[in-house]
Image 1 (cartoon, one colour):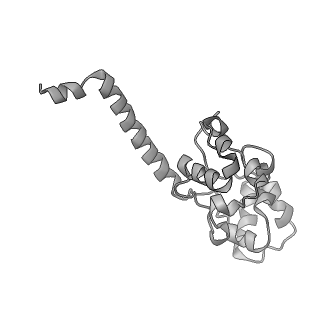
Image 2 (tube, helix red, strand yellow):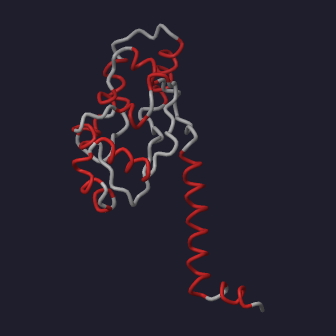
Length: 177
């Protein structure tokens, strides 16, 4: 066997190379999976609700107090819709849907890996708007994951928006628990 090939085939080099390849393939697959819109149990239209003045935080109340923004319950939706006539095809479709579906299992769109600790609270306290991370949802009928919402993207924002806190905001333990 040639010396160069024998050098590469040593376990000290082969194992890290294999691990790197597996991680690269996993990252590509994970990123491609996040980039597509997920099918929801009901065709919820974000743009209509935003155009009617409903704040993101009205439906996604968990963003104010927890790690997850939370997804609205049928009870939350019906807090408004129970007082409305079903005078459009969309409203009638919702009224028909909840007859057979007392709960809705919404499919989360903006998902972070398990090893990432993320909470909306410091971002809201820093004055960030939902659109800065989630895109202009007012122009979306179906919410879509934002491409490149990864560690490098977060770090770029942390460095740009809070240079006085860059040491804390770029410390691994800030986001990885």
